[in-house]
View 1 (cartoon, rainbow, N blue to C red):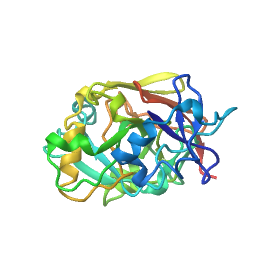
View 2 (cartoon, rainbow, N blue to C red; view 1 turned 135 degrees about the horizontal axis):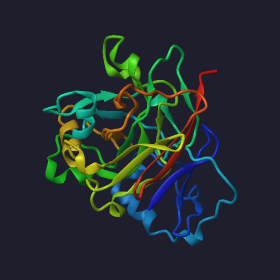
View 3 (cartoon, helix red, strand yellow; view 1 turned 30 degrees about the vertical axis):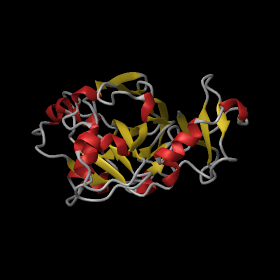
View 4 (cartoon, rainbow, N blue to C red; view 1 turned 90 degrees about the horizontal axis):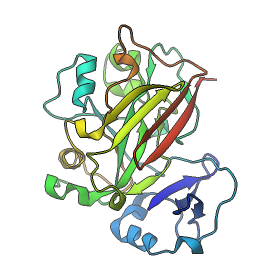
Length: 282
């Protein structure tokens, strides 16, 4: 299934994408795509619904983030061997974890705002992992049993805030609109191998990132296992698993950063595409 949330900011409704690419409304069956709705039993009940019995949503709509009421937005740094190389960093021996504020979450096609005093706002296409069952001290072999599905994330980053202002990376990762998620939550039965997904990102129609989850240092199963050793993972938590090479910071001979008026487009095979207009903070 491809689950989604659509409608105005703060008033999103649950839906699914049918085989013809039309949005079908799920409001009569559940309040939101969030929390316990993402459990295996709940997803099985949704899968049993005939999409043709659901109201079709006509006309263009805004996509919201494909998961609502996210409890934790956990990110993994330098998790692609080729990305670590382009930044001049040593590949980590253990996953680098940091949090992104949930107030950064926005729809996949919403505007991205460059924060005040920003010098180095950057892009990062990433595979998102959505948790479907409480995970605590899980082993790697069973870790994917705790995953509800996958999505596209743009881990927008302000590099000066992240690395030049002291403290932790969270400062450079958490500005409003720095977390576009979606357009769909694709359930894991449609993603047989999360370690074999092509991914890309363009800025103003120029391809900067063109990678694959094959070059992850730590795969999805290991990350779910690893993170669960330090904190419980709850249904609806989101893990952003790192980015392949081609970020603005890694451009040669000089880094390139986002400016108001530019447009980002990005996607992951089978998980959909995003498009964001870059604007200045009002």
